[in-house]
Length: 136
Image 1 (spheres, rainbow, N blue to C red):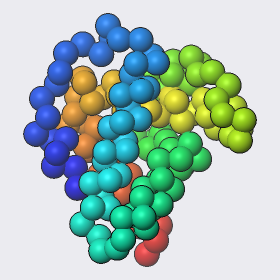
Image 2: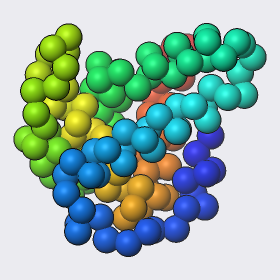
Image 3: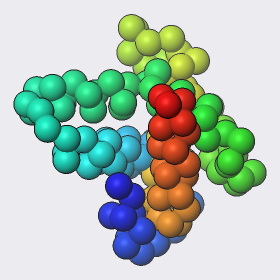
Image 4: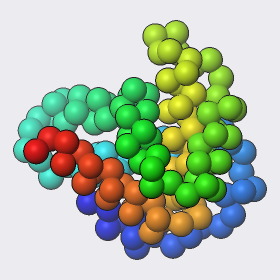
């Protein structure tokens, strides 16, 4: 379900954007990706919404980041670190360390979406392969 990314051309220089803007964009890209994963499944929109929300929560993003970490390049790890360090406290319900890691994940997604959508699609494919393997 990553074809939509594979046809996306790089869209400029993400290095000119701030960390907050990249994280904001990455959040939107991650949610779009999750919605596309679930849109072909049968179910009521309420149930699909809850399924997507479960995947875009900070805790789920941290799990995804941890699963991908062995596959990340040094540049990608640096982008995650910069996003994590720039993060603010976040919502009171969420542990600040979890929120910071999720912000790092979103920052990397936003950066890759603009810089190298093909690489982002590859990472998403790895992530979902790992998820499928763990559920088997």
